Figure 1 (spheres, rainbow, N blue to C red):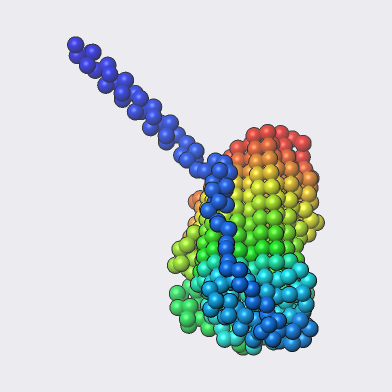
Figure 2 (figure 1 turned 90 degrees about the horizontal axis):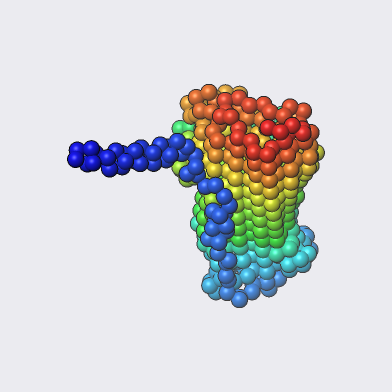
Length: 472
């Protein structure tokens, strides 16, 4: 009788043990493992709707002669549109010189085909300073060329061109490099009054309102920056000659960047840098840039940890990356963390494209990257590596701190690389925190001088993967 009573208990105990063993054996299986989540994110970003009102800037005194400053006319058109409950502010065919454009809720700034918006080279036009950001650190600085602050339901659409008129005599010399027009003895962003001062304010937690730059300083403005906005659409337009980062949605929710062309080879001319932002869809775009094509950010050092907004739920698809430091990059400013990034159906190809997929951080940045999925990407020629993960990233000296980064769940599938340059896969993790759970499935990499260079990483899981003709 006793044995009969004990038997079901033993069976139940064995079942519980088996269940827990299976559950705990590989917790990585709990991460997102397909692109269903990507489709859900895209569906969450709703199509924006605007009233049928149209406000042509010509009716407010604008002249498309490339010489008349149309700042007042464009501002009046936007104000009238807002007062009417929203609609379309129309910039017709022509060349329209202007200062910075500040968007308001329920306004669609629309460029007709043939419209060119030229942004003035008069730096005082970008004053007074506004709440903005420079390389992951918030500050009060020159206004971005197109700016929206705490607005909802905004759009920039059409088939026209925004020309920032940045070049080797305007904005670019401030980077401090001779190749961009810098002359020895001139002020640059690296002087003590500029970046070193801003970095100190970041580390000491100085309030943003007291981080005042702008006139008399050499920190370049972003091109298009919606700041703390919700429901943002950027569609169809072209950006060229940017002072700094081109498309920078910061602290935004529900952003779509569709069929945009970025053709700008200046210093730090990143194509699109979502920062502290979530539910972002970047699709059908072309990036030909002087820096990273797409770089996902979440704040630099103390700023990122204080703001503590993860950049998440970002889908990148059907894009073409040409020149740039990286095709799709996460970092280096990722102190608040990045998760759930999906890349699919993209093409990357240029002798001036350094890497295809890149993650970069260090122990000053810290942060984490979790759940990166890359599928069906065609890579032609690149310089350095198809995949590079670097937790020792440094441009400047003294990039070591106390914040150990974490990188895990990096999955690449159905990828063809014709010429990978120096490396196929280049991973440099930390002994204290190795890179975890990297998988390559149906990946073919050709032309890599060194197929694998891996430090402090769990073994990569290879499935039907070939590098230089050898199966791994």
